[in-house]
Amino acid sequence: MATRIYVPSDTSARSLGADAVATAIEREAMARKIDLELVRNGSRGLFWLEPLLEVETPAGRVAYGPVRAEDVGELFETGLCSGESRHALFQGRPEDIPFLRKQQRLTFSRVGLGDPLSLGNYVELAGFRGLSRALTMAGEDIVRWVTESGLRGRGGAAFPTGIKWQTVLDTPSPQKYVVCNADEGDSGTFADRLVMECDPYLLIEGMIIAGVAVGATQGYIYLRSEYPLALRVMNEAIARAYAAGYLGEGIRGTSYRFDLEVRLGAGAYICGEETALLESLEGKRGMVRVKPPLPAVKGLFGQPTVVNNVLSLAAVPFILDRGPAAYADSGMGRSRGTLPVQLAGNIARGGLVELAFGATLRELLYDFGGGSHSGRPLRAVQVGGPLGAYLPESQWDTPLDYEAFAAMGAMLGHGGIVAFDDTVDLRQQARFAMEFCAVESCGKCTPCRIGSTRGVEVIDQLATAADREANLTLLQELCETMTDGSLCAMGGMTPYPVLSALRHFPEDFTVGGEPCGSREPV
Image (tube, rainbow, N blue to C red):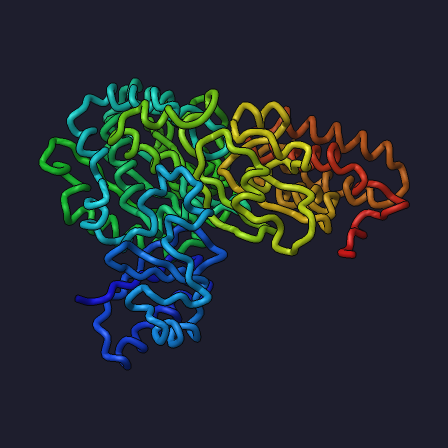
C-alpha cells in the first residue's frame, strides 16, 4: 500500500518553499523505489511551521515542520514513510499541536484534511450536507435559521446576516443576486484566501444556500486581483461543481438554479466597500454609492442583492447542517459563533486561529502567538485592518466581542491582528493611516478626500515644536469632521488609528525628551 504524504499547496506554504519540498519528496521516493502518494492539501494555518509535511499512518497522521527541501533526504533516512521518524522537525499529531488543539474550528474544520479540489473528499467530510437540507426547506425558513444563529457580517460593520437576507427575500424582483466580497485588502488578513484556496467548495455551498434562501439565481465572487492562485482554484472548483450538478439548472435534481462566476477586483482598497464593489462589478469606477437605497433593495444592476464576505458565507453550511443553535451556542452577548482571527506582524507564531467570541487579545498574542518575533516586549496591537484602532496593553484583556470593542472606540473588522513591539513609532503609524486614506479614497466626498491629505500635513507639523497645541486641536477637529461627514467607512474610520495613537501613546507625539521617530532598539 502506498504511503500517503501531504504537502500544502496554498499561497503561504508555497511562498515558504512547499513546491520545492514536494518535488524533493517525489525525487527521493523515486530514487528509493518507494510507492508513494503525494497529496497537495491546504494549509492548516500554522504558518510558522510551514511547509508542514504530514504522513498518514495506521494510528493517524503525524507532522513535520517547517520542512525545507534539503531536509527531505534525512527525513526519509530516519523513517519518514512509516511515520516513525523522530527527526528534530517532528511535531507529533497535527491535532495535538497546542496552537491547533486549543481552537474551536467550525468554519475551518475541514481545511488541511485533503485535496481542496477533490469534490469527493469534500462530500466525505460532510460537505454539501447543509445544501441538501436547504433544498428541502422554504426560503423563509432558511433565512430564519441564519437569523437565529446570530451570524453577523465578518467584515467591518458586523451587520446581522439574517436581516440582510430577509430584506432581499422580501423585496420582489424577477432577478436577484448573491455577491461574495472576496476583495480581502485589510493588513494582516488572509482568512478569505485560505477558504478559497484550501476549502473552495465551502464558499460555493454557502453561496448556493444564500441563493436558494432569497430566490437569487446568479452569484458573483469579487476576488482580490492579487490572489492568482485563489482565482485558479475557485474557477476549477466551480467547473467541477457544475459537472457534478451542484451549479446550473436543476441543482441536484431539484427545480432550483444557481449560476456562479468569479470576477477579478480592480486593485483598489475602496472596492472592499460593498457599494463601490457593486459599481466595479458593473464595469464602472469603484465609487461609493449614497445609501439608501441599500444594496439589499437596489444593488447589482439595480436589483436586490445579498452582499456578504467570504467568512460570512462560509459559516452558512455549518448552520444549515447542524442547526442554528449549534452555532449560536458559541460566543458571548450578541457576538455568536466563532471568529477566525489572523495573527500577523511582529509575532512569533503567525497564523489562523478560530475561536468562539469571548477570548482576549492577550490569550491570542501569548498563548497562541508566543509573543513578539523579535523577542522584545509587545507595545501595541492594531485590530481590524488599516482603519482599526491601536490598542495598548491595558486593553488586551478586553474580550473579542463586537460591542466590547465598539465601546472602547475600536473594531474587530475582519479579525486581522497586527502586533508591534516597543520599537514602533505610533506617530508614524498615525501618519500612515491618513496617508493610506489619501491614496485609497475614491474621492467622492470632501471629508475623506481632502481631510486625509490635510491630516498627513498636520501630523507632520506635530514633529516640530511650532504651534503644537493648535495643531493637536486641529487634528482632533479634522478627525471629527471625517468621522461625521464621510460618505463611507473609509473616511469615517480613518480617525480610529489616529485618535487611538494620540490617546494611548501621547509620548510618541512629543517633541523634546524623546523626539518623534526616535524609538530605536536598545
